[in-house]
Image (cartoon, rainbow, N blue to C red; front, side):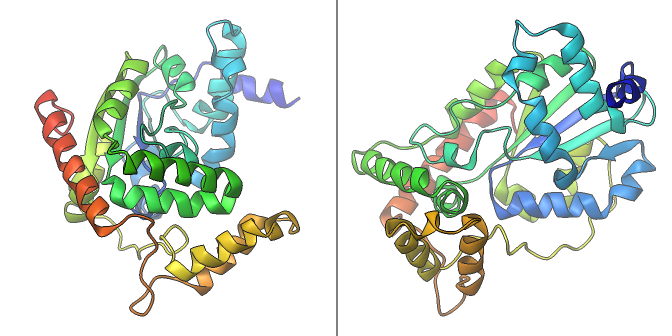
Length: 307
């Protein structure tokens, strides 16, 4: 019965699909919260923003390689795409807007010296046969991304996160450095029919309304005020120490939902004046990563990614 019900969406096609791909960081959550607050006003402009809490479970289905692989059945592809994504469209002129971190990969995919090696773009490439797609990648210095990705990874994939952090530290100690340039070029090469643009964390922070207007494809007057999210903020040093100690002792295997226990530890030990934000990077290493970030921006700018 559900399949018959969803057949009503089979021929729906939005005018455009605009996708923000962000790192697992507070700025991405801030953007998602702001878009959710102005969802109703956006609909008056023909824009359908799908909040992350409504979309993420569908994305897991959309990213199944068995569905959207080259060998997949076209009818199954079309049905999956329309029933999970295009079903929100009220008419063929509406734009769909998404903001999703997991398109770049799992949070632990950031913890490599060559980060985000395998983005999840199969459903995006298939959707280009039905609508115009623009992808917007937000970037930030890895001096901030690495500690945040590790903290989040410790909640959801604790043993893997610890292993990857050690390997990453070894690579950094050998003089290797991460770069956004291959990430951008790889993402662009894997989505040949999509337009890829970028913005920096700093640009979003200083020009939020302008940046979001660029994502939406229409000008908006102003974004609603949104407090900085706390759930995705990098916790204090003591929080990570306690979480790591529990993983080392095997305590994380004894609880039913470790991510909730870890989240409670983080909330009880948030970064503040008396407790610095966690990082496993030395000040000298942070400076080097910040310099590499500026070099990446200078390299990508002439190619028009930031226009």
